[in-house]
Amino acid sequence: GAGVSQSPSNKVTEKGKDVELRCDPISGHTALYWYRQSLGQGLEFLIYFQGNSAPDKSGLPSDRFSAERTGGSVSTLTIQRTQQEDSAVYLCASSLPQVDTQYFGPGTRLTVL
Amino acid sequence: AQSVTQLGSHVSVSEGALVLLRCNYSSSVPPYLFWYVQYPNQGLQLLLKYTSAATLVKGINGFEAEFKKSETSFHLTKPSAHMSDAAEYFCAVSRPSGTYKYIFGTGTRLKVLA
Image: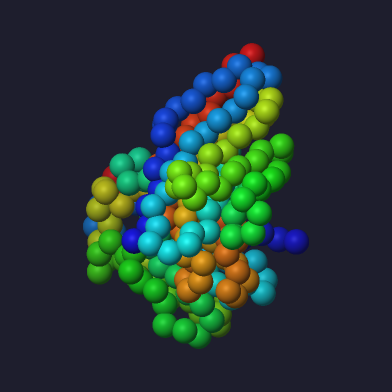
């Protein structure tokens, strides 16, 4: 079946602009995660959604970062007033509820000029 | 708190040689442990996982790992390296319940020499 998909695959933006990154999880996966992969910080957890529960936002690095999940499926990660240090690959993963194994999408490479 | 340390950011082996990628963890609760592989410009693919059952875990592509509580280690091995094993490998730890969010190591890039 279809895996986790992310769009766009690449995004180049200018410093100060807002960006939206999209994640389509595997059908039936109610748990959804965002991670950031950057040269300086490695792979970092950002945010976690599970069904209708309040999201775990403990990994978001600043209030410029936000995410939402509509209808329990598609998720959008928004970065406002982008900075050069936001340049990274943003990975989305999904899993079945209360299951440990996460399935990752191919990522969105964000470059902030 | 949980953390993962991967010793060696780059490892080179000859084709056919043993692959050993090291992972040590720290966790205040019994951990779940994972190895993922990332090929260039792709997402992460699960190789294997330890979730408190058998301590010797076999995964895909001939890889295996052994959970050693006394050493807080979960090293990844493969008896004979293949050129297609060249990739970046990540060890991750999570709690056995709750959000299951992963704490990743910094990764080890494996190079296989012909």
